[in-house]
Image (tube, rainbow, N blue to C red; front, side, top):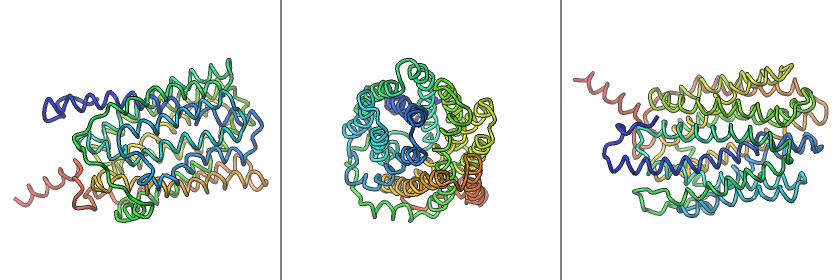
Length: 419
């Protein structure tokens, strides 16, 4: 809970409260659309006869978008109105599924949807840095994430029911309409920083990311951990349909549990990140995500998938909160958007390779679904180990970056000890 006492003035409190309310509405729109794109669309495509390589293309869509996100400094939003327009365009693309339901259209629409988030993400992170005090950023990210996840839980439930009655494509299109309406909230966000964000090239985005040793280490850990999860994603639909023969309502329940766990976990990880540092949250959360992957690999029935869904939701929330906090703690405000674009591009390139690798091995018969998922778990386990070994030094790499709350506490203790 974001308490008024955390803010230094009544005016600041009102400004932050207003922005947080509008931000929550926008996050709800993202949660609704993302829930149906990630939860229902692969199962819909598999029921339509899409082969594993096609499922891999669908799973690779957000990472193709992330790779193209390296150009966010040149074609991404530079104002709140442009942010709203790009996010609205991504949500509106889902409406095409109500008319065109072929596999190529599903893949193309998915790419456009995720591209709207990737291109706008770096500017959005910078906007957070100007709208919210650094000492509560972790809790703000957690609060917004919980709102997004709660919306995703409701959308997964309603989407599963609507998909069984009206058709999966229609359900996803209705989610796009909700996202389109909610994206208008971005226009109302207000920031004391009226300076137009500087543009940056793809090369600048990689340079900004490499300039921070902490970000480089976290990117390496996430490369392995996330790579295993991404490679496994196309195989989940095969487990749902081929091994367990789940209905779309069953898949919706799994989505509900994942989103519900994410909802509550965001609040927990936000508080942990502000109090103990984001690396603690990412270490614990990645271990939960690994456990969920192993459970999915060995699941004999849907009950095990319910447990895996809860663990996966908690793990996902820790990574989302951790990344936002780490980037904010270890970059200056001026370099923040570029660093985030670099992060997206690197994870995007990794995601494209990972999404296709396991599906190709499955398609040509080298692995089956179970062994493939266990192999993915081995890759993710390397990332969990790297997270455990990563430095927890909270002091920023950039002298111009504002110190985190933990950094200020450490400096205060050192000063007291010296006296």
